Image (spheres, one colour):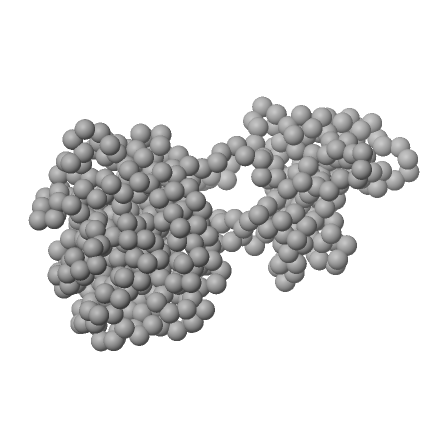
Length: 532
């Protein structure tokens, strides 16, 4: 840590744009702001996912700020397989967040930080298994998963909706103390912290004395955090609008979900130390945690599965033979047309030059397996449909030459990147294809991907009009003034305002509706198609 670190601070509870429709802190702005304040490190702890881990790692590193990969996970004190709320007892104060009602909660919150690269990998496993096995309102993990994958992690008691605090809110101090002791056993005494926050909320003031007493009794070090959801204080209104989009409410609704106050931003070290002036060790420990956390991503590794080859063949020789065999199947009769031969030779040369014969062999293998087993497969879409080699091998069923499709949109030696083949399988039997690939090439070579739906300019305008309680016609009129998409990409609001101003001198009668939320992730989902 730099000299004068006793006056510094590291934010370890941070929600970015990857906390869908809840975090309003965009990564470039957030990491640059942390660097401008001279902060040595910064954590990412999004709600229930680590989707943005690598993006954050790259951007934070580029800004000169040490990245700490974490997650505010959803923990159930019961079993992740139990699809019913957990009973805490009567809760006296319900102004905190968490799916709790009359003492029942589907989940609690827990802040997890990766101390080592192994810990980061365990965090990824926790997140995945929480989604695959523990989904009930939120992706939840339980004690069993923590015991299996807790190595290399630092954990805290979390926000007021953490398990320890939930027991305290229910007046059950002994259960809270036992829960804290159990977490100490799971993570190790040196890797479990009592997280303290101060946003001026009654729920924080209610649990703080008992939490500090438990921390003193069990020797749990304190960790001061700010529940960061946006970068600057002035972003509070935009974040409030984002919450309205999440909950389908309007800003003028009195009883809607909202954050109390405007303190959920990247506060300076001086602000945080002033906030916790009576417990400076809570701020000092953020620097200690930052020193302990050291993770790296393996970049450039070859993770491609290996196609089982006949004896005496390598991937290149077998790929060439498979393309040749496919050409004769597509153009039976013994003679391949000259223009087809020329294009095939060109593509084979490019594919071999870029080192992708094995990729084509693997993709062709499971596609043809699906066809042989009666699983419906789409004819091909996206840029891969422009490849004659893919057509010959049965990866696609569209002749790119007959349709004037361009191979270079798929692979271009001047822009080296992995091939990307979108494949549509009958969703009723898609799992069989995944199982075949996993069994043949190994589960460690197969993964699911996530796609994001984002709030683009036109959708943001309409959302903003609704949030501001304007008639639908206001948002509709404004979006019609915006220029059309260019090559499938929408024009950002900053690029639309000049044209819209020129197009009409008269603003809509209900007033302009400006959007605080363009291009933010709105939801995540597994795609209906498969991607190889």
